[in-house]
Each structure stands twice: as structure tokens, then as C-alpha cells.
Length: 348
Image (cartoon, rainbow, N blue to C red):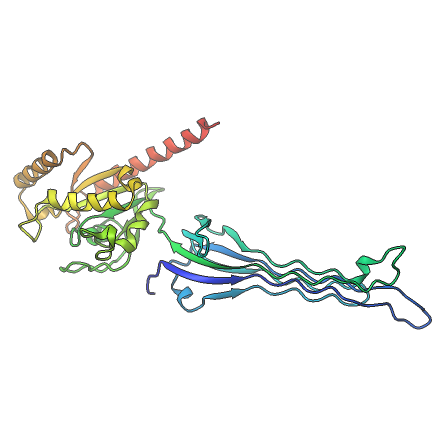
């Protein structure tokens, strides 16, 4: 299935049914009085998060959704049937905005979460509602009100604990293949990954986390260059970033430090929140160098960057160092979760 993470749709709630103008007509009953029933209410439209859906591609075809309108009232004080609500399934992690106003309507992060986006019209009143001691035969009714309509922008942000960032060919896809059951495309040319991939990394009994492989970024990604601008937003939901650097880049003119600074600059341009997230340095492809040179490159890179955070040496190809990285990530995520719980408890 082709990955699509943005779409626009139009939703229309059902109209309310009209009230009925009717008088009781039965044999041997003269002037039976008004008996017109009310109209039914129009159906609402809900967006429902469904974890079995992982893309918005269906909304490239189906762009209009309309709930059922209410039926009109009838004689004998019969109320018209209300229209059925319409549930529109979207992927978990979908953010909804109003296209016309820019208003954030909602964010569906939990499976089964429902969000009402438009409300159905109210049913009109039948003439029986207007009967009084001074008006025994009212001919007044009200019309049902129209249902709401909206033009919505749907944006899918992947729900992952860990995001992989780095230049094309840094080895992100190979790493996620090595550490999880995900099978993204891997090849020896840049931009092999054309859409984000998710993988579940299991590090022990009941211990696992979700890792997102985001397509490679290049300089200028925050302004729209390459593929990055389409997918930088997926990193906003992650709790930890792993910044992959090639220990022996193909382009000898670009050092690992240059590669690191290039991506860090794009993250800061796109969102200050991304730069504030915990970020670890992961030096990949260590199988290409002897152990002594690996340590030398690591020390030089840390010194040149003035890096004070965690550093890991791994080979996504051979799996060397990936188990230790997974265990460390799991511990960090558990600590972040505990800290978040504690802050919620301390909040007034």
C-alpha cells in the first residue's frame, strides 16, 4: 500500500427532518386537533482512530463523507427517524485541522478514539407542538436545520518511541532491519527509503519499543529540499532521537562531523522542539574499520562536536553493538516514562 500522510476531505452532517403539518382525521371524530410529529435529527460525522490502518491513501479517492439526514415527521404525532451517525476510520496518530480557519480540531492518538467533527441538524417541530388553549388548530411548523459541513485537513504523524535521523545512506534502514522485524528497502544508493517505516524492537520479556526509520534528510530539508520536509513532522511525536553518522562516508570531502552538523541544522530550523528532545549519537558501519581506527574516529568526532551525550558504536550490517544500543534505549524510555508520570502526579 502506498504511504500517504496528508489528505483533505469534506464532511457533511445530516440535515434535520421537517416538522409535519397534520390534523387528526378519524370517523366520528370532528376537529380532532393537530397531530403533526417532529422531524428527526440529522446524523453526526465522527473520525475514529483505527490502528489497523497505517496510511491515508484511501482519502485520495474518497474525499466526501455525508451522514444520513433525519426523516420528516408524520401524522398521528409520529416523529421522523433520526439519521444514523457516520464513523470515518483514520489511522491512529491523525491530526485534524479545519482548512478554512486553521483551527486544530483534534488529535487521535488512541485506538478507538472518536472525535465528532460535524454535528447533525436539529429536527423541526410539528404543528402539535404549537397547540394551546387559544390556538386549537395551529398551522405552524418549523423546518429542520441544516447539518454542519467542514473542509478538513488530515495529517498523519507516526507514533514511535524512537526516531532515526541522518543523511541518506547513513544506515537507518539497515539498522531498523537489524533490530526489528521491519523489512524496509535497503540498497547502496541514496534515498532508498521513500516513506517512513516502523519496527518493533524487542529487548526482553514484555520490553519493547517502536522505532521509526524516517527518509534521509539533506541540507535544506526544512525549506523543502529532498524528501525531508514531508517527513520531519513524524519525528515530533518521538521521545528519543538516534542520530546516525557514517563512520566512513562515501564522500571523502565530508567528515562525520559535517554530516552531523548538517542534520542538526535542519532539525533546529524545522522545530526547536526537535532540538530539545533527547538525542544520542550513533556511529554506524564500524565493520568497515579496524577497532583502533573506530576508537580514533569516535574520539575525534566527539571532540570536534563538543558532544556530551551518549555515544554508541554499531554495525547495522553485522549487528555488532545493536543489542547494547537497544537495552540502553529501553532503559532511557522507561526513565522518561517514570519522569512523565511523576510530573503528572506533582501537577496541581
